[in-house]
Image 1: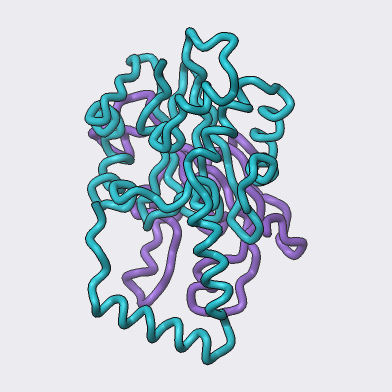
Image 2: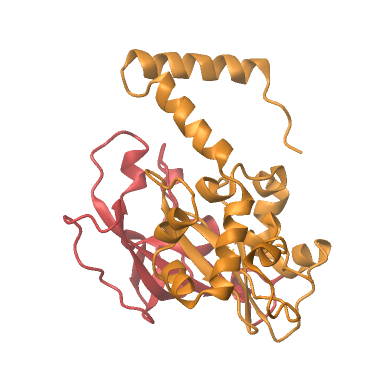
Length: 193
Length: 102
């Protein structure tokens, strides 16, 4: 959905990288390594973490206590990345993640954010009328469920731990993980059987 | 990267009522602030301290950045946004120097 970068902005980026190189602040190698980490990250890692938390009480406790350690345990490269906080949905509370200031997103875990996450429309509407935004996603929540919008404004990145759907008793973690989409990991959707 | 040793202990405990400063540094000159406009001057409640982090207002200008306590602060959806539904909330990361006792 995001427009491709313009020639002018690519030229500006080249000059910035050249200047950072010249000052010895960052090398091409470091940039390539960071891109490789984000390229390797994918919502499947977050989905695996959720499925494991649903089925393994010890892993659930680790996830709630230390998100980065739980992500590392699931195979994500978290070295040098911001803290990872986990927001647990309950029958009474649903979390929705947005960054109104820019586009903070748990990239180390989920990969690049989708275009809509960075759009002005989502960033302004998610805090203002979250129920309308969720409804447009087809996510209907009961009136007695509190929506807690989490504006990711500083040094943490946030992922949602959705509720395990009913009717999945005895499922393998692989089968459970397949229910957990990227959108569920930021709270615009909920896993469904 | 959290809980740098030079940071003072958190001033606010979970549950503390706080007010976000009604301050608008962007009217005074170039700045980089992580406090959204819609909570400035508003009352909220501390959920928990999140650790101490270098002040982004200095980091952005390559100035020496003291570590500041960061909090998760909870606000009621209305009155922050009148479009919202009573009972819904907005939770925001806010640095201690933006908070005062309410």
